Structure formats: structure tokens, C-alpha cells
Length: 203
Image 1: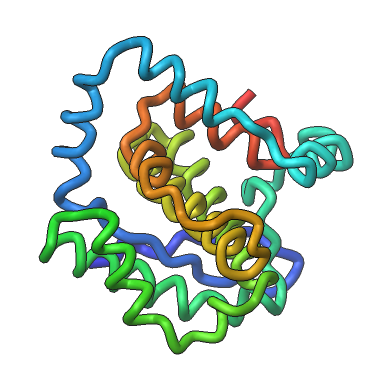
Image 2: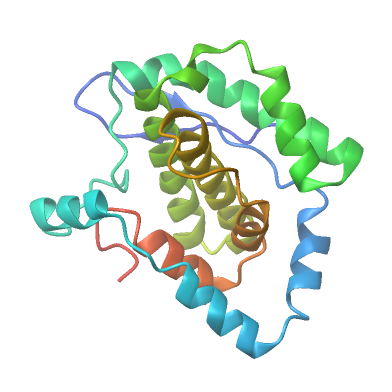
């Protein structure tokens, strides 16, 4: 099932932003993650805070101002990506409910949507990363930490896909990192998002 679509503001006509229910295995994963040592949590927070140059530059340019979209721009690329977002969310929810394994569910959903042109477009992947950073930030600010972790893991996955497949700057996807963000606690998640959005909403 999908939540009622979120609406983002834009100078263009409003566009529906689809969202989703939390996969049933998310709570189990978070309970397991809470058992990790404090040292591992601190290490995770440090690892998650590597800011991108583009994010830092955007933050300087906008002066921290935010229209509620946390850096997402609804442009023509975004309009072509919205149907994919709906397919991705539905596919992942179905897969995780059936197999209960996050990495396998990501791969199943990717295979189901493999014909979509967004996978081969850097602009489309960048927009998807920005989209899921936006939804993760909204969820975080609304106190929905579990859902924020899910959306942040989507952003991390698509960003890694671009690096591996399109930019060829890394050999393979680091699934441990995707899982770490998926199961992140509040401080780790805040650090991850803060360094990747151009506004100061999480400062």
C-alpha cells in the first residue's frame, strides 16, 4: 500500500510525490541494530558525514534557505522519474515482504524495473538521489526515523549505482553501507542527511 502522496512546492504546477509504507522487516532490523555497541554507533556517525562538494556549494549558494523540498528540484527529469519512483516503491515493498532480505529485495526490484531508461541516465539517478534525500529529511523532521532510514538507504543505493555503473569510480556496491544507513539511529541518520542536502534544516 502507498501513503497519500506528498506534495512538493514548485514554480511549475504541483507534482504528486509518491511514498510508501514501512516494510514489515524494518522494525526487526532496527531492533537488531540497537544491539550494536556504542563504539560502532560512533564510528557509523563518523563514516556517514562525508559531505559532497556539490552539496557544500549548494549550501553556500542558497544560504541555508529551504522551500520545504530540501534541495529537490521538480524539473522535466523529475517528471519522467515519477512513474519509476512509484514502480520502485511498490516493487521493493512487495519484495521485502516476500523474501525478508534487504539486499535481495533491492536486486529483485532493480530487475523488475531494469527496462526503465532511468538506470542509464546520470541526470535521472541524480534526481532520484535528491528525491529520496528529500523524503528522508521530511520523514526525519516529522519524527518518523524508521521511514527516514528506509528512504535514506534508497538514496545511498542509487548514488552507489551511479558510481559503479555509470561513473565507474568504484568496483561494486557496498551493501554493508546501504544496510547501515537503512538501520541507522537518529544521530547517524541526521549526520548522513545533513551533509547531503543543501539547506540547513537539520543543523
